Length: 234
Image 1 (cartoon, rainbow, N blue to C red):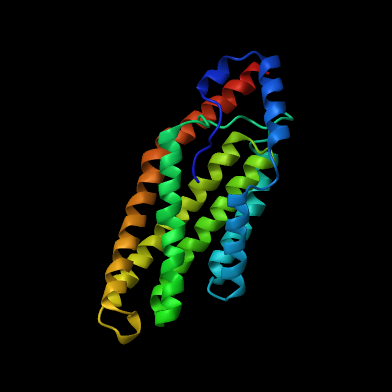
Image 2 (cartoon, one colour; image 1 turned 180 degrees about the vertical axis):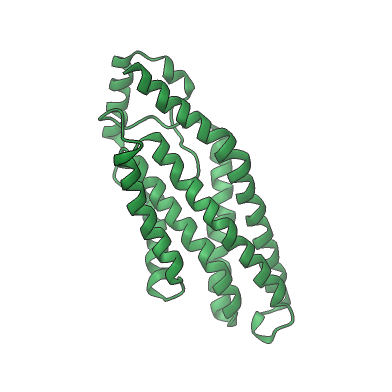
């Protein structure tokens, strides 16, 4: 969900011919969108069509698409006709577990929370949780788009960093809404109130770590090092 999954840093030591052959092989194996990206697109469409998404969040996602294409042409164009290999190994079990947990906590549980809120009439809970889910689904879709469309590594890094930074504000608003709505008749059952608070806090902690503990200090430097290292070679 955040951070590429692919060949390890040992690929930097490959010769140019081996690198191009490996990249060409990878590019032929990729489809345009994976099942995960299609699911994210479905969430985007359903939430947008239902009117639960604010105009600001919708325009932010549209702006991101336009800005990604702009930066890709002006600042960080692809250095090879073949797709850049991801920063992290595809068989990295720890990263795979981390991504799966992030998907469960960040998407699956909040979506269940929103649909339960529809049944219980918790309009405030739905309104507070929807921006995070919509933006995260947009992030997953854009990550797949930039990877499968052959964007450069800096652009693949830009998407999760940009969306994660935006979602920090929506997560804080979600937590504040869960705290304020306690005791209100339209806030749902007490079980739902406590679960909503726990879910909001967990997501705030998770995505704070993802941004400040993984994306910025780990993923971003490695991606730029590989991008500019390959640029110097050619």
